[in-house]
Image (cartoon, rainbow, N blue to C red; front, side, top):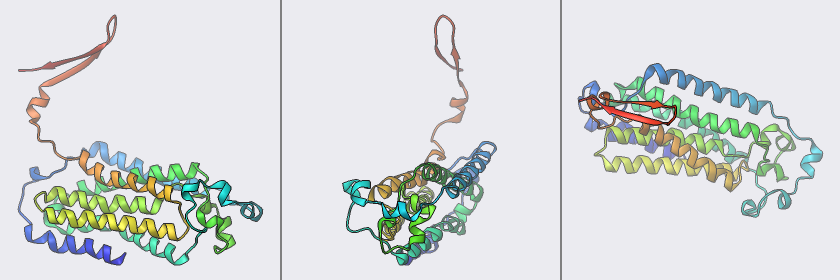
Length: 277
């Protein structure tokens, strides 16, 4: 996993630097409405924090409840791959990859072209994380699903009884890792659209890191396969789509400004469009 992170660093430090070109502010591939999106980013961060607060309010399980768990009765057949599993080592490795992915998008600011849009990039990144964090925390805080480790006799009873043992649905670590790393791949690709090799490296590294984190969470007994299959696409889409919806459109804005519309009601309902010549 450390090699994957180094692949990102090498891509950012080495592959971008030779093609740094001077540009004007208008050359930025992104548009951000700060008056609207800064409050939205704050709301996203706040809702994520509230979701994790709700997660911490979940109650644990007593030893009798844990003893009566039956993986053959409680878990669908698709998720019953191998014996109930637990690995403290895999859990710690997944944490390193999870926390290590957070600062990587800010390393893009070492590039001169991207650094000129530091404010825009930062707002978009907070939005992407806020969206992913809100969806995950609000879901996990309202769904009680035991992790695979809760069924494993190898896991410490204290961990099996913990409230965190009910947070199997869905996989948060690989989801947020995907958001951070695919965000990097998308942004760098938008700034350097002609560097196809660079795109391939970044998207491959993002995929390997995300799937690697998912594998570690699986080995650690933190999630079932379906938890990971649901979480990864959510994180990936958020990392890619948030920059995409901010991309500057190749549209003549003077023409857009001449277009007006209104909704009318009464005996008839509809929308009228008018174009000012």
